[in-house]
Length: 193
Image 1 (spheres, rainbow, N blue to C red):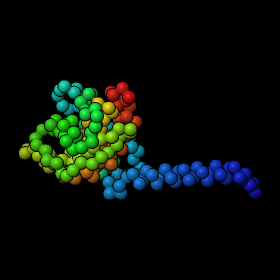
Image 2: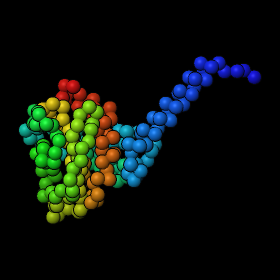
Image 3: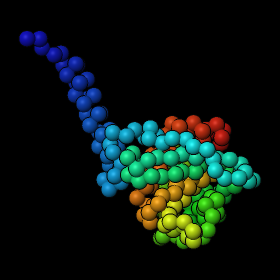
Image 4: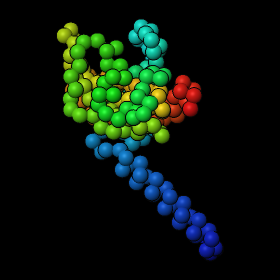
């Protein structure tokens, strides 16, 4: 029977500890009640679809969808940059700034905040997220999660729409996708990071 050299044992033990620590960190950052299957890799369940809104002063953005099987509920996500539109000194650090830069008006109808927002991070950028009820008379009950974050004076605004009244439940899925290589590559090109 062959014996392992001490250096090999240390290397194998270190690798195992690293894998275990990484798994703990990933599961710690993901709330258990989000109903997202653990086999889904960040970003792999999202499909890009056509931007459905008319062009305005901020131009077109990116639109994505994630199905109920992968994200727990169907989610439509709209993401776009607002160059030079963020408060350069404080960033997106309160609900008033998030509302000012948000894209909720694209969805039509009225909105009502479902509580206070909370601080979030996407890569090195800081910002906020906040849940809203969407009040549109001729449409079934929908709600939205508004996310805004910035790099200096430039903001990225994301609006996730769901067909239930608990948009906070999708925050983990949305933030995971916003941190994915798909969105980060787009942000790097768009913001010149």
